Image (cartoon, rainbow, N blue to C red; front, side, top):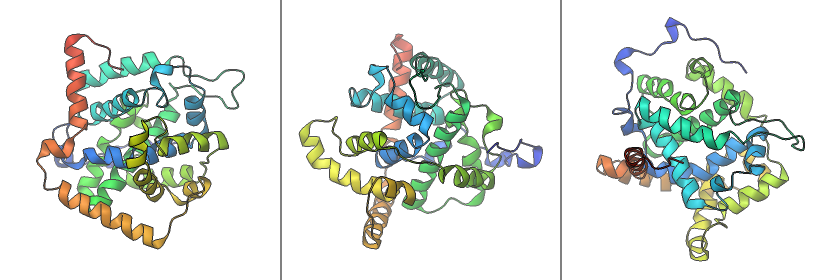
Length: 287
């Protein structure tokens, strides 16, 4: 679906326009951990994105080989896209571009892809926005309409920090919902990706004690956050009782999280943004 062009009537109320300083109150750092794996599954359910990850020759960026580094680069991207300055976003774009240059299909690939394709980036950005908004709503309740509109407009940065053009972002939340519904129903999970996702969910790349302690909880949360047809394609079961347990868990987390100091609520995104700024000052690699 091609997003409608922006016009003056689609522009947000200037009084509700967000900035990196004001948007922080709507971004929960803990959501990055809670929703990360489910969001990856949604992103990679677009086959060219999934094949790009499966066939990637960039070993330094593979979560199966370097899980801590991959977590850092992914969360740093979200942090700089939402909270960083324009100069910081430009610097991170250049760093990511270096890694992305070799992520493109070959003659042997079953589907064509290129990491610089702005349409693929639009889908990834849409998944990130949807995931952030979904978890915020589950934890704190829905934003009021003016705030939700302003946050949605601001969230275009999740794509424009790379090569997605601003006019590609659906003009408002209604158009986004149309884009989301039309595209999500077309997504699927091929067997090779299912195996990859199961390893990711069960933390097979981590030490055994980490798997024992956290894998079961992660599988429960991932199952609950996935859209139903992707849940079905993963062979996951989910009951009404499971839904009540997840709803209760997220409400409790939201209540506790909302009472924390701002720095604690933002962790670890603020820590990764601090690390990015340190790397920039010291001339160290960003990715």
